[in-house]
Image (tube, rainbow, N blue to C red; front, side, top):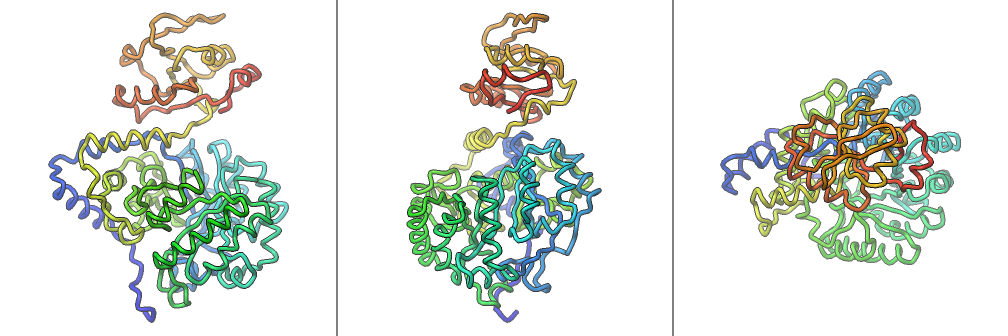
Length: 502
């Protein structure tokens, strides 16, 4: 290759197995089973499934490792049909957040709104990664009718020259009104997604001013995933010194124009991370070393590419399973994903993490089963997502915790008519009397003999403590579906018997 760079090679799963064997030998782990069992995650922690409904794009950006020039493509030009998408949704329902992304422009697909119409009853929210060029006024209005979580709009220059140089086929004066309309329609849900490299860093310092003028309040920064195509066309990643200088200038501009900034953890070093944490006060930032912080992807995400294959890391080959026939929950706690979790959580990173994300082992991190369990517990309950109680399948057997006023209101407003409430759990045994029925009121220690699918938590103040109890005492806790009421008693009183909103 003329650039002299080595070709990007997605490591095979065999390399992960080799890393795992080296990890066990180095750390003196004789029995891997308790370590793999410790990172079993409940379904509610599968925060997001990203799906590539098409791998084509209307742009041809030189920093994109998939779309710049056909001979640098890493994904085939594949479009999921509506029937394939429908099949995927049906075997995975319910889905917390469904992201239309993964190496393509989703709004190129002629059936995207038809897909969203079908998926809406089965997902909590939608997220999009888009260049925005295809979003007409009509499409933006239609998007407003869906449960949108986030819209990440790719923009890599704050002026015409930079934008049109690095967003090939984009027209700067045409994209600005689209961004303004999206900001008006979606507010804080719109996030400007910027890839930084040496050639656009000066223009990106002007990005906060442009976003302020267009009504956008948030931006997120990504590093360049350097590849031969980008290098051949004069696109280069920043050195650590260049990145630090750039970030300082950008943070000053964000402060000046009131832009909240989130950051790809691979984009910055420890020094910059501390500055970002003090600036943003957001969950995206940390004052710890970015390069030995664990990656959350194998804990909370799955990717489906345009071929219909699962993946849990964009730098690995697809998992040998078809997303159109295998439910995501069957893979979410599969062996190779668990290996990634253990090595990430204990900061002894697989070679793929070191190669593509610059991860560095942290020798100060204690490698023990007890430490792993402690870290996983924290990861689990900080990331737990909650599904609407109205989507509990009719006939499911549920425990309700605890027996306070909110529980009484819930049951009196019809929850018990849609599911079978096995018992109400509290610290003291007894019974919860309602107008037309009496429900058993059991202590935590007496529930082991019950058969239940679902746990509904009605406590706003003590839900973490309740979850910790299940984590410590229920061997099948990761197989349960957890729901939490997140509305006030006053709002509950105004609901009818059709369900509850969280």
